[in-house]
Length: 229
Ligand code: FE
Image (cartoon, rainbow, N blue to C red):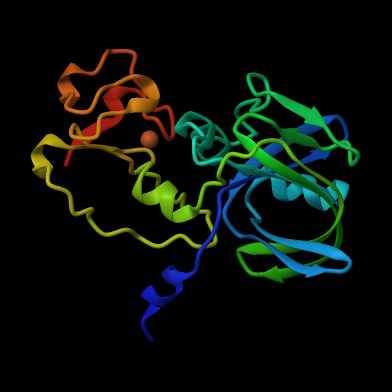
């Protein structure tokens, strides 16, 4: 069995949000797909350890914000690598409350869906929630981000709690490994050849010359959490 085959499946990058009473939370997910058009239903796969899982279970609603190609890694890092148990992800995030009373992230969002859970399936580490779309709208004509673009162009990594997580092999780039630095928290690799344009770091900037307040674009870890490859 060649398990690399499943990596050929295409995905997008989304923020799934929900609520529990007055509390709100959201997380990044790539496994979101439409199941039927009449009635319009969607499925999402959410890790049981995640706070958003607890909230969807409780409120039986979730929203899907479809992220654009231009989404900064800081937004993906906040919603993908931080837990709502530790930080309030919405305090610095532009959002609105939908008809389901769940939050809808508006930053970098191409469009959104709001769903009421119809059923759920236990799949071990994750639960697949199937929801009926009760509202949706387009917010911009920007191109949605694909999971492949997130990995190849943005240098994004999959957290271990992602349904499609696989241990990644060493990236093949022109930069000698000795000049690249790896984030010990999330596995992101700072490649001086690429720099970190989202944070204003020009391509060609050596790790040593990054400003002291520079942080990992994925998980916000400080420079001290990086080690030479
Ligand atoms: Fe990191």
